[in-house]
Image 1 (cartoon, one colour):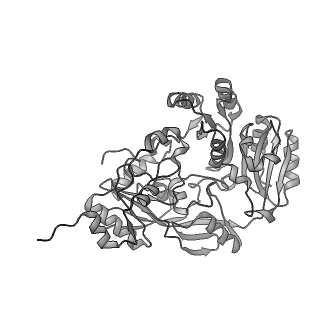
Image 2 (cartoon, helix red, strand yellow; image 1 turned 90 degrees about the horizontal axis):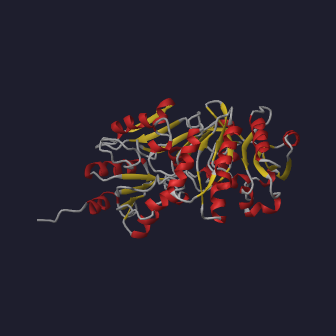
Image 3 (cartoon, rainbow, N blue to C red; image 1 turned 120 degrees about the vertical axis):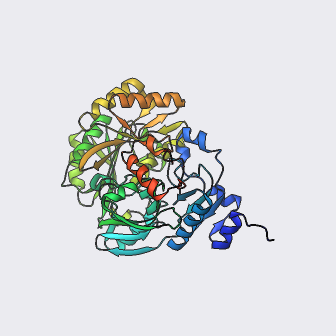
Length: 445
């Protein structure tokens, strides 16, 4: 009587060695992301065992085959794009199969005002292609070069461009193709508010294989650094610019000194002991922005024209969570928070936090639009002393009305996202055995 095949042998027989990998190097490499931004997550996840196997599908049919196989054998499946997330999204907490979708990298259609792509297309490639067609992507993370479109939609929220176009929930995803994890996986085409169950879901409610995103007309962008004698004046300038509808912009990122001192490639262009605001504005609007900066006691200390856009390191490479990365390169004891401030009282909240914690917390803000409102969001740097001290800072911020989206947890419920309840309900339908990226949404199967 022939010996029964193991599941590992069965899946190789089903899909072949070109699609399935079991070698240690591949499993370890693809079972990680950038969770080391958080000392809390680094401590808890760095010893996590890698996936038992890796799937690298090239088509929707192969994605469906992996999901059906996992369902049959009750094997967890954790999806990943480029692995640039910061919260352990791509870490397989329960082992099983990591499904890397980076081979699904076809730009399927560039239309008038939209792009339809496979989930593994890198944002930088999409933007280059769109700009050649007279358009550009609307929002993107600071990991633009490496990050995939599907990874950004499934693990991100906002980014460069959010000052004009908002976050992912503000119409920046038009449609998605989703596969469920059932005996026979269903192919769902999702649009409208139904998309909310699949944006920032870590692949827990379904596997996104294709996504359609809106495009904006191509703009020629100038990059600037405005500098101010005080951080508060830089914030007020940022607010005024954010609300100025006559200035088309892509980025307004104020940060207090010494944060700009961490940006070694730009250090010769940055004046010491001054707050800095990293800016991207449409070409031809420098005089208006310079006059506005001067009205708040500031000046433009650095300007790069559109002819060098994407040809050298850009100011956006020092914003959003790349600010944290540059800071950590200088001082490994630094980590960060994600915070939403009160648009009507952000200066008062800043003062209270500085009075309480001084330079233990260093401010870095991004002015964005959310739900149509101009909002001061922050990615403040924190000198990490202990987990207890970190959560003391978090609890104090929350006590004065600053909303913290905790970046030191892999659990969606703890990240402060309002859509988790709906995701739980969707997960029960699309993933009845609870096998999609288990441990990221806490609920009873």
